Length: 204
Figure 1 (spheres, rainbow, N blue to C red):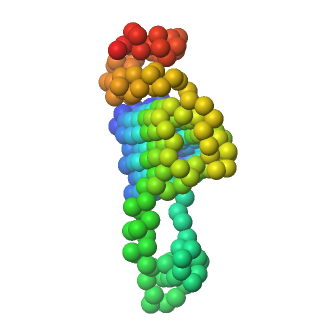
Figure 2: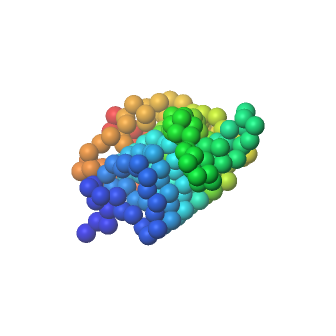
Figure 3: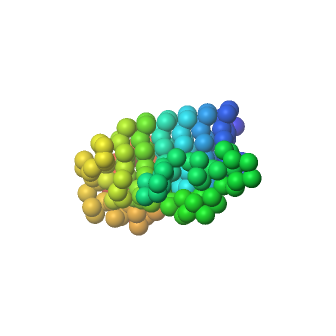
């Protein structure tokens, strides 16, 4: 019997979930935190991922210790410290600055379908990772990444495209990530064995 199912995400021990929603066949690795985010069908994160204020597409592969949507401190104010927006933790009769928290939730990171984020990568708020893109381990992504582009470094810069532009455009048009579960199952041998162009030629 398959370990994952369409109804309930597979949660490993010690996960921390806050205002998190999930699609079908989702897996959350040990010790991971998912806050104010949605992870769509078939996506997973490995151990100790930290995902906040993010929209994660389908079939996203998120390695261990990845951080998405790391929240900012208010550098334009007199102090960056959270005593003035988590004030209720420090002062009797003081309340948290809910406007600041609401603002941070609007600064969403967006992770496309069939993406791969390598070990320890970081994606900053308001950054979009395009469909099919790869973020190398340890990279810090501060700008949008084009579909099917491989990026690496601090800050991350493009290394090369996964496919030629025409192949990438055809793959996006095919949108296999929207196929029904049974169709994916029927095409399993071709996903395993066909190069991308041959796969497109068969299924376009």
